[in-house]
Image 1 (spheres, helix red, strand yellow):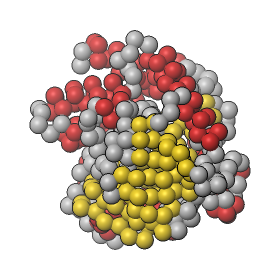
Image 2 (cartoon, rainbow, N blue to C red):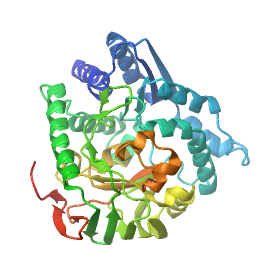
Image 3 (cartoon, one colour):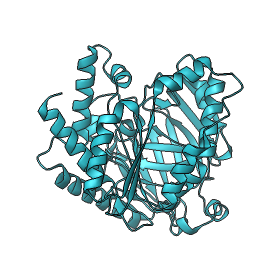
Length: 413
């Protein structure tokens, strides 16, 4: 690697610690990462200790080991899960320690494997992770999801290039969309967060009762519950720390009412889910629940997701992203939800974030559900926005106004 690359990678590590996580002196930090991310994890560790971290703990994963399980393990063993992995995450989140996930995976890792076993393993993981997921849904601590290129992912994004060129191109794209090519990335992020904050304030002042989506293959109405809160950019955790949950981020988001979603929506980008690509799919909702679905590829994986539990066939998040976002304008298909969800407006099947409801962090699951919030083991974002998407805001009295046209905001902020 060149000195310029190493310098930029160090800037990335510092950006993660100082801006994304906003790590405070005295905090502990747990990092989850693929084994290929070790160089970045090491730099993050150094940056964290320099920022005053008491302890940095790294949990590595290896996609080849995951694949080996599906190819060789006993067919009746896939409901088993190493519970300690979930327990340690729960412990860190409950203590208000910082949490970093470096998310990079081969979108086709489990292509050709038994979809039923994939579904069983995915549900087992989600079931054990539920206490941790509930703490994240309540924003109990500062957390962040970032990514790095790995060879198998780079090969999917740039299939016509050599292996070295694939990695170089994907690193270049990542540095671009995370603003690391700017003269002062931290200052640029500060201004970006300010702009997203202005957009979320505009939406919070509107107090829409619903959103109407129209695009080719999409005619959908999403009700918004009383007391919903729009977020964008940074978020304040229960431990008092403002943090940025995702880098990159281009979205403003809130929660839908779990029982007030009606119509049909068509995906605009493939969804990478549990080692399988789900492509060109549509969902039909009635009374908030998916009552029909179709997919050109990966339909069995979609079926497993929708049948994971009662809440996985309902929506837990609605997010708006303009079509002129830097990621959309890159014209790249990333096959990675962290990137693709910031290229297009998107929805999420499954769990809603309780902090997107006024007082939601203090509600029981029953109270949250009564207020319109969805609970589930799953939380899976899928992209629906495009340059042909129109969205209207609907007020409580039924009047409507244009919010987005051809994928872009109607009103500036």
